[in-house]
Length: 438
Ligand SMILES: *Cc1c(COP(=O)(O)O)cnc(C)c1O
Image 1 (tube, rainbow, N blue to C red):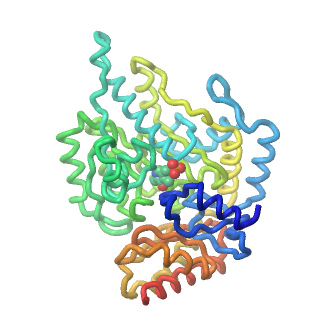
Image 2 (image 1 turned 45 degrees about the vertical axis):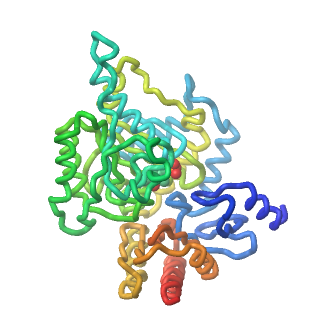
Image 3 (image 1 turned 45 degrees about the horizontal axis):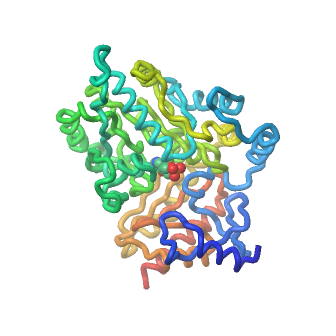
């Protein structure tokens, strides 16, 4: 296809994430990607700082993942999961059981992160419906715990209930108004990761639960790292205190590890920083190494047992592409590749290098804060960035970095070399300096 034709079709007919279709921003056609490089159709190649939104932990075009996909596609790309099962699902389940805390052992495979969150929220409601049910009257089984609590600046996805627990200001609440379910929002914990915990942080949750726990099905949190809602790292103590309070009040605890899973924070899952096991966990993004969409919601035994005691013991969800064999096969290969690699050392080295590079910006006017955790490096600016201006500057500097709001951040593939990482960081620092000077 002619490049100009591709651009025309795209510009006139195709929506991109969070963009206007009538006044689209600049969009760069990609021809292929390899390792940590995205090759643009015009011949330029960019070092990828985004891992395609947390996903491509091994980089692009990975021989082992390609091989897993080819092998599986020759057997079957897909088969329905209703009434049928297959080796790719069982093999992936076995691997996940080996990675997760042992209490999390009932796995629902879904098709995207947002759906994993929807599934977790439905599980929580069905769990409480079972507890509320009475053998005498059907009417008494109407669930009373139908609301959710969360902290501000979170992000949990773009579907309806997932959206309802995204930050009420930065999220999409204003736009969708009263059509969104109303949830309980708590302040973001002020105690940062690696700093002393201020016990005042937990007070709002304490008072919310003592007044409203009878309405609340679950507390949903991104443990340690809030991603798309603010790239903020908070204290593991908050999670420990929250878990204790939830248990006391019979409120389920859901961890959304869609962004943090598979090593990104320096641990396989961020919950390991806090040694807290939630009732339900959601994973996605890095699960297939960024090859295709797949997510999972994993519950503890008692949640599964609870749901099974409801008037309809079945859990009421079942997407068409549930446990897609192709995606499961690649996910297993991705986990094997991760476990066979020195990923902890790699993530640690990335953190050290990012901190030393990005810190050179810390006294720059217009820079509010530098923070690094695992393979996540964040430069927070005083003002929101002008994307139309900064995006071409990054591309001209040979890197793919896509800021949002006042956050310029990178989360490279773990396989990035020292030299590539230096070039990525130097480009970031140079562009931010130049951008702030003008
Ligand atoms: C990306 C993300 C989601 C949504 O996942 P999709 O695959 O985009 O639907 C949910 N929660 C968190 C924490 C995420 O980072």
